[in-house]
Amino acid sequence: MNKTALNNAHIELGAKMVNFSHWEMPISYTSLIEEHHAVRNTAGIFDVSHMSVFDFKGGDQVAFFEKIFANDIKKICNDNKAIYGALLNEEGGILDDLIIYHANEKFRLVSNCSTREQNRQWYEKHAVEFGVEVVERSDMGILAIQGPDALNKILSIEGMNPQVNDLQSFGCMFDGDKLYARTGYTGEDGLEIIVASEDINQLWDQALRLGCTPIGLGARDTLRLEAGLNLYGNDMTIENHPYESNLGWTIDMTDENRQFIGKQALLSIDQSKSQKIVGIILRDKGVLRSGYEVIHDEGKGVVLSGSYSPTLQSSIGLARVDQGYKKDGKVMIRNKMLNIDFVSPRFIERGKILI
Image (cartoon, rainbow, N blue to C red; front, side):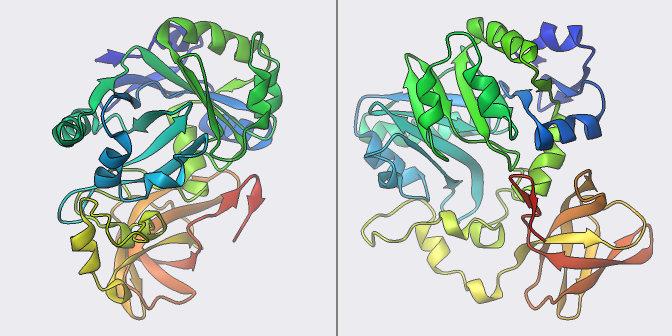
């Protein structure tokens, strides 16, 4: 079982630890609902050091990313910014979703832990053509500090670089080998900090002393679900293409000469017939869970992710459904047809209810 550098700190705080893709990670410290509200109302801190971090050296790195990344890396090449998008196979299936950071003429990439080995081999396979060296940064950890008061807490940390206050959404900066980015997975403001594992405990301890609440993976999941953010393995897999996974906006076909992996397969897809990911709200008593069948007047679908929403105080979910849905539909739960409403997949943003 893999452990992050903060494993002992989690145990000392009384965290309930679980196996998450072969990593021992905290699912909660107190209660999921308390931790969820802490992020929505003040500031929470997450250990997400199980995520995969890669750096790149030498060669033509821009051309490398132009080939393997379905979004266009050139959008950030002249800025200190991050970009979100997908790795696709030749059939247009989603290998993973990831964020690539660019600052100080360097690229750093963060992707999911469950796809670590697959992705590393994919990067190395395609890097050869461009003379790029792939460097897995297993010596780094990641902290996310999220919430409306997150930036104030971060700026109060001893030795914090005050320039982080100038970062805009998806902005990023290197401070030595440390990376600060105004990104997150909660629908709230905040930073993600990629830092050497040997320094991460000190940063964690300072954030706790300043009043950040430790947050486990349980609340991380309900927060991202309210924000309408996909979870790889639940809401999309290698069997899905971006247009049926709410990732069409990350596919950049502007440059007709750019031949990224999966492009030709995507061009053959009739988007007017593709299923879509929608938000759903259960109007009857129950809880939405992955795998439940969804039915509407023009077709059907399936629940991908579902949970109780502490903010909305309702059961919500993401479902992939046939097109033609209207306002309401049905979901099958324990052999009963219950009522649902179809809504935007983004329920909450920066504390504001959007539906």
